[in-house]
Image (cartoon, rainbow, N blue to C red; front, side, top):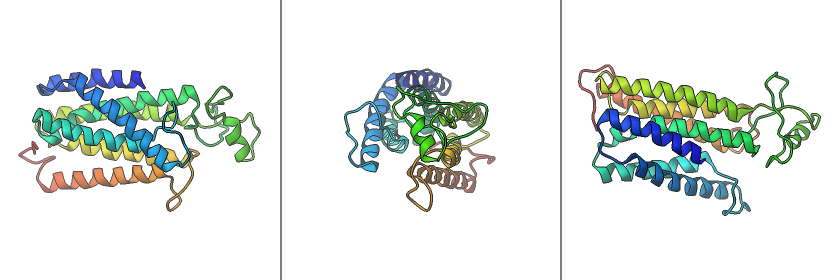
Length: 246
């Protein structure tokens, strides 16, 4: 988790520098890290009754996202930077931090892996994994030593791609080709779509219209991103003559 925050810090520093922001990236990452951890834990405890709050496991992405977003909004006002510009600058770092954080899920075997698979890159998570994959194999009527989808690895690789795409969109925003808000909209769409799709092969319980909580959250993120894109286009932002700056 701390490696994820460190990676996010270096990328955020680079983005602040190219945008000429005077905000301190170290403070931004520190505040968001604390808020994100607390928000992720609170959401998980609410979503999973009986789970202890003070433990090293059980962090829900959506709770961390909401808490981190609220913190970023407050920091944008604190540093007196236009909100969409500030959130644009923070979006690639958020994508990178999320991607790197998934490596922790992979190495700890905390149950973020997927359903059984016979694909050659399927993996096993034997003890001392936090949630041994043998439990999932038996749940699906497979041999206890079956392999499962290494979904954290999928999310890590996709997260790196999303980070690169967001960085390049940021270049177009700075060049005046896209409006401020385009990076944020793309982040919401791409990260939401990625989470929505990967949930089809993850082992999370289905609770709403056949979807998991995380899948529902991913769909909401996707819709919010599309709505923002529509707003920007309607306001003659992307591909328009006058980029929106706030």
